[in-house]
Amino acid sequence: MQYLKSFTLPNDADELDYLFGTSSMGRLTKLDMQCYASNQYPFGIFPHKQLSKIEFEPITIFYGGNGSGKSTLLNVIAEKLKLERTAPFNNSPIIDDYLNFCDYRLSYGTPYLPDGSSIITSDGVFDYLLDIRAINEGIDRRRESILEEYESLRGELTHSGWQMKSLEDYEELRKRNEIRKGTKSQYAARRLGNTEYRMHSNGESAFAYFTNKIGSNSLYLLDEPENSLSAKLQRELAVFLEEAVRFYGCQLVISTHSPFLLSLRGAKVYDLDGDPACVKHWSELENIRAYYDLFESRRREFE
Image (cartoon, rainbow, N blue to C red; front, side, top):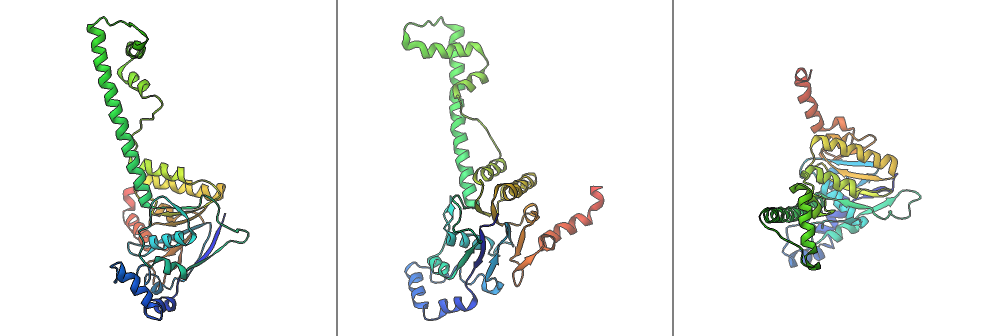
């Protein structure tokens, strides 16, 4: 499915007029008031790449090294489209002025973006991992308390003749009966109730985050989703994303340098390291060629 057809960025003339032309006084006032006089972000990033218009496919990928602008481009698109996000965009005082130069077109027959369309950033994933860690630490503390309780009551069962004297003692009786029925771990599991006690790796939790956040029939922008993922999980994520597009009506725009994601079937890849930026087949990208040359030079070690 395709919801977003194209997106246009300010060209060189637009940026020059804004930065140095008749509107420059308004810009300087904004920057001076906020102590950002030397910060023109995101102006000045894309004109020299001659990237003024982006045409989208069901899967579109922005590739490039650090500083290439791929994450900035993804966030600019998300801000212009007013997409949902879980982590704030660390923008500049003149981002709204920049967005006024931007424009977009939706695909024919798409009057508006579907509900649930969103951008998923590395910051959002990181915040989620911190939340999971805090939850697990809370469960850990509760579990330790229950195990201490088990040891204390177990000792009393061995050395005392406790008896129930009234209904107020019912809860205590239930605990003691649970101790008699099973092991320490079984007692802890029953006392924790339905709370899931799971200690996943960061990669497993990050993978679960994407599979939970990405639904059906929506536009999703993904900023370097490979972060925290092992090669195995990157490959599993690639399969999941292909199926989200093929079977569940999603459109994806991804910034990445992961070979597993760059090789998504049918993806249109913009090489932001190029001068000018241009569309390339994933196998032509510089980093991919470096991987290929390495494995080719060590071919015998794989045989």
